[in-house]
Image 1: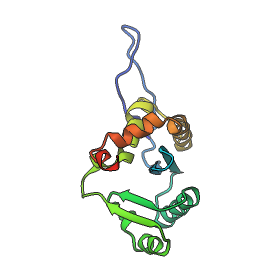
Image 2 (image 1 turned 135 degrees about the vertical axis):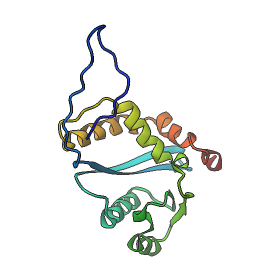
Image 3 (image 1 turned 180 degrees about the horizontal axis):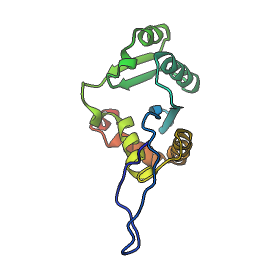
Image 4 (image 1 turned 90 degrees about the horizontal axis):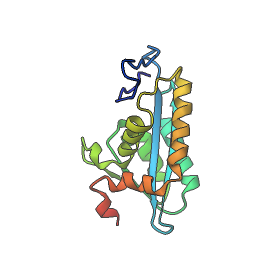
Length: 170
């Protein structure tokens, strides 16, 4: 809930004041999938935000099922080693659905993960100096920003091209 304070502008002699609420226990959990379609040459973004909730294995599996409904054909997931990604229930679900395959990134390698680039862009550019009134306000503004760049193929591809893995995808 605390804003990421970046540089700002103010009139000379007027110190900018950034008001914030100090409810540090509130949060927004997020999960995203950034996908390339080799057939249509399009990049897609699917995001789920949860206000004041944790990302559980059950919620993660629901997200995967939702992806499966929207994306036809085989899917290769490139995941970091988050515990929910390696959970037994998730592995069981992946084994039960044909056409789903997982490749894990090496440990401690956020620079290889295009979704980390997306979160960094959102946090350091779109939400910089933003002090939300409530966790629902933060979720609403985050959703609005995600919708605004969801249709930008150039921006979505830049998250993928910003990783060393992009040469493997060409």
